[in-house]
Length: 366
Image (cartoon, rainbow, N blue to C red; front, side, top):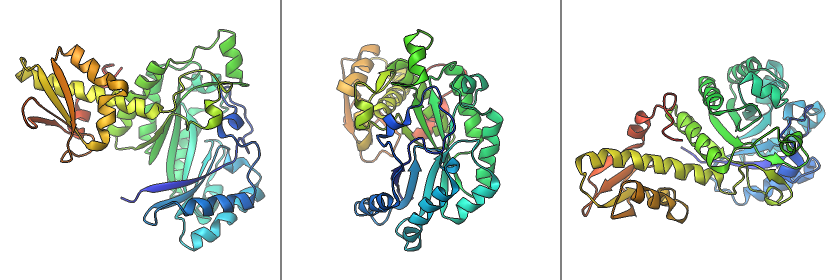
């Protein structure tokens, strides 16, 4: 499968008729004005110099509600990209929009102009959460929009948020289950942050909104990630991109911001996977005190955890005299091995691990 690369063009809050309680897009994207056509061309040509030729490339218009900006501006941006499509330098166009800002006619026009992927800012499929967040649409509008995107032959992406006003774990898991039924090609998961200058900041300072802690956000996102993974739906991002503006101490007032949020989630998943394997292994090897875990080389840091936190936790919880981690090139992605001698004695594959999960009935991952 070819790797996909996006050339991101930010059009901050452009076209959106709403100001959701959590949104201050200019601070997040660092761009206060829509890019000129000359700037778009420059960004594309600069990015193409760094992208390997074997990659699938999409020019991605992010940050605003693309289908709500003036039609001439939409067409200008799309026509600006057309030469790169015609020359085969890029493979398609990706854009983000709201569920209530598309119809079949516009989708057919977008498909004709080279749009290959549409990411919907769904955020939640819970009616109360949408209302409290001032999203301005209902869950049934989300479902209809997803169906129309599928019907138009365009890839569907879904963006979800956790920790919104009125949200909780049960609602997040139900939103995830409904999102899986909508058959997206990809998903992004963002924890809600309290951004300066938003209505959510006012609610937070008045004591009417309590953001998730970093641990809560990591645990909930891990559970959602595993549900999508079980359904073979890739989660392509967890956590906001750590731009300079977002890392500015004046931008994020409160909430679970971490520049490596997605890595923390994968470390949590790796810890749970290691517990699963050790539980099975130690049933038959109860007296073993010195154990080695084996993982694919690229997953070594996830299994070890920040400052060896996963290893320290496992060693303490299982009463192990020593616990080592070694990279093993023969293991496929998502698998894990264990042994107490010179080599592997038991392997837990990704599929075997996913089959052990029953997140709706238990909170094991949390």
